[in-house]
Length: 160
Ligand code: 4NP
Image 1: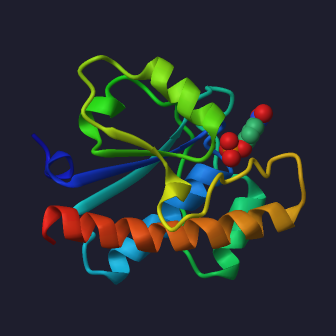
Image 2: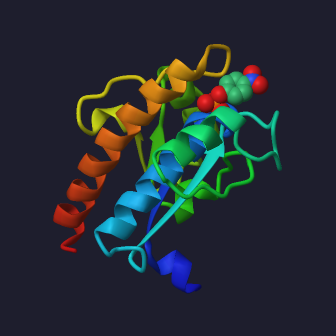
Image 3: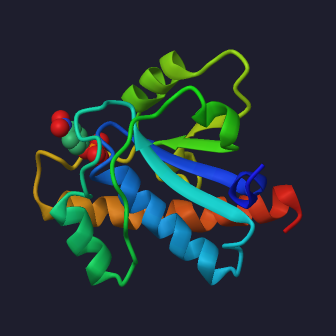
């Protein structure tokens, strides 16, 4: 088993894995680093759809990360059955993602499948793809609050 697999695994999931979930991944990873937990918590992201496999994050996600000095480096990939075995938390952005993720989940999956916005009462993180930069700004604010609450929850639950 690799060192990465022994870490607590957090996987952010949206539809295309180019807008919201890479943003969430980057913000969670930064929050984890700020808590000095990068050697304990592994963060990744994936999409329920395969439209953009191999693509870099949307330029608006990248510019939002640059604005808030959040390092981002991801290539889009699709959510797969194995993720439900390897990750502890699979955190989706909206109800469609939840429905689609449930269809991918194997029976023996161990991951907790939840709406990411349930951490910190942020509700649904809406798809900003067809809108303007303001949608990315809104998503950034939501995922920042949720990331803080998630890390607090993980610290408490796993005794870190
Ligand atoms: P995301 O946004 O799910 O936040 O990455 C989208 C990206 C691409 C598409 C839809 C949503 N698309 O239809 O290609």
